[in-house]
Each structure stands twice: as structure tokens, then as C-alpha cells.
Image (cartoon, rainbow, N blue to C red; front, side, top):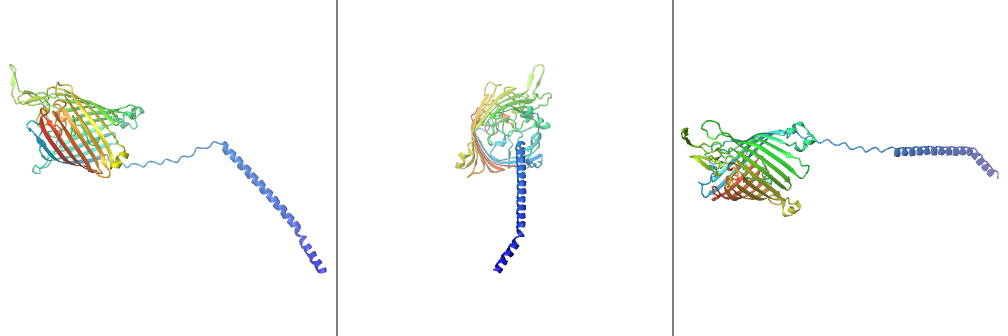
Amino acid sequence: MRPFFGVVVALLVALLPTAPVRAQQEQANAERIRELERELERIRTELEALKAQQQAAPTPPPQAAPTPSPPKEPARWPLRFGASVTFRYDSTEVEDQTDLFQDENEINGFRTRIRLLVDYNLDGAAGAGLRLSTGEDPNPASPFIRLGDVFVSKSFNLDQAFILTRPLKFFGEPYDVLKPVENLSLTFGKMPLPFWRGDRGTWRSEIIWDDDINPEGALLKFPIPTGLPFLKLENTFGYFIVSEVTDVRFAGLTNDTYLLANQFKLQVDPVTLAMAVYDYNNLNAGLRAPSFVPGQGAFLSPGTSALLMRPGLQATNNRINFGPGAEGFVEEDFTILNLTGQAYLPIPPRWVDPVGFALLEPFVAGDWVKNTSVDRDDEGYGLTVGLRGAGKRFLDGLFNVWFTYRDVDADATIATFADSDLGAGTAYRGYELGVNYRILPDLMIVFSYLNFEGFPRKDNGVERWFVDLVWTY
């Protein structure tokens, strides 16, 4: 019994000192928990106050990402060089060659046309151009020269030499009131043909102007503001020097021949209309006729025709004989009215893609011309239907096909500057079928067939066909 009692006493003695310590630890832990709860409550109170503050303050707009600066375009060399070489086979059959007033270059055989170009462009505000070409002498509408002349060198002539300026662009950004006409331009010199003659594919109207004519003078071209995005108006006015005759004794008529021209164009895609007036003055300059005036004297030297009636030019206008070797126009001045229209139909890609084409665009164009200064042989008209396109599964280059019919009276326009291929001037009726295909970006093949009844009374049958290979750079 004593040993058991001793063990119990020992345990009680061991437990007595630890009870106060445990109570103190529990009290300390409870105090620590209360402090942590107070700290958590304080943090919760601060968070709620901060949220309330943020909700009361306006939300700042999001910061936009900085717009990246566009890459700078490399500086462009203001000079551009170009060249064009055309190799042609020309076949011409004429029923009565004595009647058709063509030069010797219109005989069967091989021909070539070579052109070299350099132009300058100063940010669209100013520019200049210079071009050399074979041919065009004496016929300004015929740049092709004969091959097969004992391998002699080919001569070049000054084909274009002009200066172009857009004066409103020199002042930087124009005022809002000038913005619609900032492309107003002035051109001086021997310039590319400036009048609108159609713009579908490679086809251009040549009832009045052959493609190779480059007039000389001054030109003002300006857009007319409309405020409508679908409507475009433009006016082109020019003064051109046709010929100057030295004013000396016995030189004949020495007044200068000049042309005043104005064309107004209206465009509402897919339709474009243009009306032009061409006013030629002093057409008989250079005419000199033998004369005898009793009591005053006589001038018996051989006569000369007006400059625009002399050999080498397309002289198919009506004429009056003023004496041996002296021929002139029926009127000194011609005022010619020309109306031109064009419409095209862009076919949606989803329609042409299944049949193997990337582009198909049929078009139709018409011309009417009237000389208001003469009483007969004073009208002409032309009608063209065509198709421009590009293949996809086959013939993947660009191509153009067109058919043109014309009936042009002798004095409907000035023959010197009219189409040198179909009609070779005026006084003809007939048609042209043309096809071209761009084999490579800088190489094109062209086939043309022409059949018409020509000068002098639309009764001289002419059949022509050309095959051209054209390289451009």
C-alpha cells in the first residue's frame, strides 16, 4: 500500500507546478488572437474606405496605344527613263493608188518605230518631258519608218518637249476652298495629246486625232468642283500653233495657222461624255497663186499650195484650185464640234472566275463630228465595241479586242491630223478589227485588220493588215 501511495503523491507533486504555466500560455494566446482580429478589422476598414474613394473619383480614360509612325518612303529619283520599240509587218492593197493620198511609207513591207523618253517629276508640282521618235516627218501621224534601206542608220526627231506645272501645289497644303482644284495644271511646249478620247484598255478614238499627234502650244486643264463624289467634271483649254509662215514679199498668204480648242468632260462611272470644239484659223497659210493684174504687174512664178495641202501630208480634205500648183481649203477657218461618249460594264469576279477569267469588261464608245464652217461633206461618226480582260486558267496576260466602224466626210475634220491607219485622213467609210495580247509585262503582240472605201469619193477600196510586236520599258 505504501508504494502505491508514494507513486500518487509523486504524480501530484509533478503536476502542481505546470498548471499555472498552462493557464498563462492560454491567456497569452487568447490575447494574441484578439490583437490579430483587431488588425484584420482595421485592414478591412481601410480597404472599404479605399474602395469608396475609388468609386467616388472619375475613372480616367484608358491610355491609347501610341500610333506607330509610318515607314518613311525611300526618296525617289525625279528622272525617269523609258523606251519603246515596235516591229511591224504592214500589208496594204489599194484599188487605185493614184487616188489615195498616202506617202511612200504606206507600201507593203517591214516597218519599225523607236522612241526614247526621259521625264522629270517634282512631287506632282512640276514636271517636264522629252521624247525622241523615228518618223513623223513629213507626216506627223506616221512614226513608222521602212526597214530594208541598205542598212543605213535611222534618224530620230524631237517628238515631245514640254514643261508641266501645278501652281497650287507649290504652296503646300492649299486652303480648303482650293482643295478641289489643286490639280489645276499648265503645260507648255510640244506635249502629249491632251484631249480625252476614251480610256478602256488600249483603245482610243482617232476620228479627229491620230494616236501619234503631239500638238505644240499652251494648255490649261482644271477640274470643276461638284461636291458629289460620284460626279467628276473637267475642262481642257488649249492654244496650239499649227504653222508659221515667214512674212516676206511674194510668199503668198502669211497669216499663222493656229488652233483654239476646248473640251468639257463629264464622268459618272461607268459612263463618260465629252464635248469639244476645235477652231482652226487661217488654214490657207502658205498658199501662193500666180497672178496678173493689168496696170499693176504680174507674178508668174510656180504656185504653192497651203501648207496643210502639200505632198507628204494626209491631204484628203476638199480643195479649191487657185491656179497652177496652188490648192487650198474651201474655207479659211474650220470650226469643228466633236461629241464623244463611252460606257463599260465591269462584270463581277464571281461570274467570270468559273469560266477561267480574272477580268472581263465589255465597253462601247461613239464619236460624232460636225464641221459648222462648210456646207457639204461636213459630218462623220464612229462606233466601237470592245472587250478588255485577263485570263486565269489560260492566256493569263491582259488582252483587248475591239471593232470600229466609221463614216467620215472629206471636210468633217482636218485630214492632216486624223487616223493614219483607218482612212488615212478623211473621206472614207469602213471598219477596223484589232486584237492585242500582253505576253509579258513589257512585251505585247498586236494584230489589226482594216477595210475601207477611201479618198476621194469613198469609192477607192483599201485593205490593210498589221502585225506588231511592241516592247516597252
